[in-house]
Image 1 (cartoon, one colour):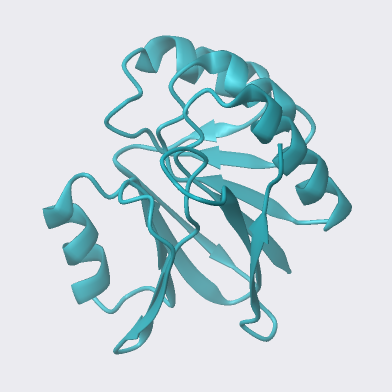
Image 2 (cartoon, rainbow, N blue to C red):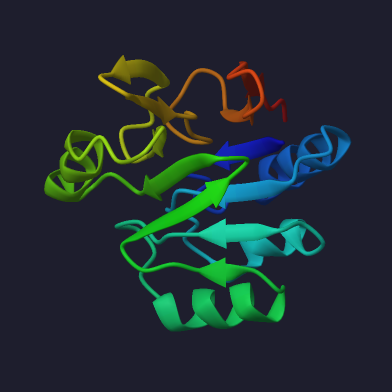
Length: 162
C-alpha cells in the first residue's frame, strides 16, 4: 500500500496539479494532506483521489474547505487524522500546535506521524514512531511531497517542478 503525504501547498495551483498528476502515476491508495491548503480551489486537482485532510494555521475558511473536500469525496479530519492502513497506525496533523504534534509522537501509539508547518523535510525515528514532514510548496528551494510504501517503509521525497 502506498500513501502520498503532502503539506503546505499554499494556493500553488500549478504545482498542486503537477503533484496530483505524479501521485496518480504512482498509483497511491491514499493521499494525506497535512494542511495549509489556503483556498479550496487548490483541492480540485485531487478530485478522483482518496483524500484525507487536516487544516493548518493558514486555512482561514474551514467551512469552504470542508465543503470542497466533501464534494470531492474526501474526508476532513479534526485537529489530527488517524487511520489504520496495511496494519500500520498512522496519524497526521499540520504541526502548528506543537503540543498536539508532540503528544502524537510521545504516545508511541502510531507507527507513523506526519506533519507540515515548518516547510522542512523530516524523516526521523523517535522510539517506535517514524516522524515525516514531506516538505512544502512555498518558501523552499525545491517544492516536494512524499510517497511512502507501507509494505517496506520506503520513502520517496518527490520534487515538483513548475
